[in-house]
Length: 433
Image (cartoon, rainbow, N blue to C red; front, side):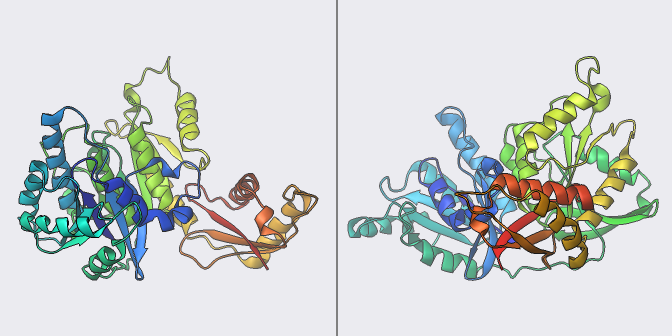
């Protein structure tokens, strides 16, 4: 489980700029797949050898000024509930505003590490002005300029010092996380699986801070179910506060092997579903998509084939994902969902012997190599699977810089065709031998 750092504060103080700065040195790696940047509010970062996730609470607030305060308060509350460390961003130009004081009052009751980042400090005069932020009663502050990056190093040094070391929970059992937007049917899916007959369930104390692990052992399957549904259902959390489900999903996805993404068939594949999907892809987790409430859909206007095609369009280019139509109410294909999740788990840890890989793949790339660029031909000599926890392959060739994205996709599709990596993100590198 990596630590989660949440950036809070009122609008326009520079939260998103700071967020982009924290994750930018990782962006090129994390977001190499087109479309992954669709989830603007979540990223991976590292500093001094510590990896952590960053959540930006910006960009969610809607409505007029009076709704403003209410929304910000809710966001800060959620961020505080879900994150391990809080960075509270304020603006030196405007000084302490009533809204800042409100947020600070709330944060003073919290027992988690809180860092004040006084933003837009780019000269000595402003540095002196920052002193007033002591009045927030949250102790030490850090002056930064998130636009040019000054001061962010000192802030991060202090932040990572407060982090707990990553605990890799060793469990032989696969971990399946049930994720999705509110009201898609996550709780019902889990109840249908476990049944009311609770004696077959042993609850493992909430090791992952609030996501509940349930050990499932039936029909010859054994795994841990990471349940993000129904935990601390907040009456105050409005449906539109999508931030809530992103936060929940981050926690669950980071600690699982396979994410079972539950969609509501009556609502289609929405932006929030897409965010959660890319979150799993970005973390290189296995994915199974469950289309729930299929019994409520007008079959004349929408067939399974149409619905599936629409979902695959949205998740391109990573379309090799099992999609299962279920009705939790009638328990239709519930078992199939679990069977598929187990298959995806097996695909994710699949290892292909180097000799076998070269035998199949070298022949393919020889007969259909990358297109020549400026009269130069790429020759691929050798390939192997890397000893990583998830499937990653390296192809050694003379001119790796000439291998473009479409060809990588071609090679990936061939690997999927021959070795069945359904539901699992694959990473392919071209390197000079």
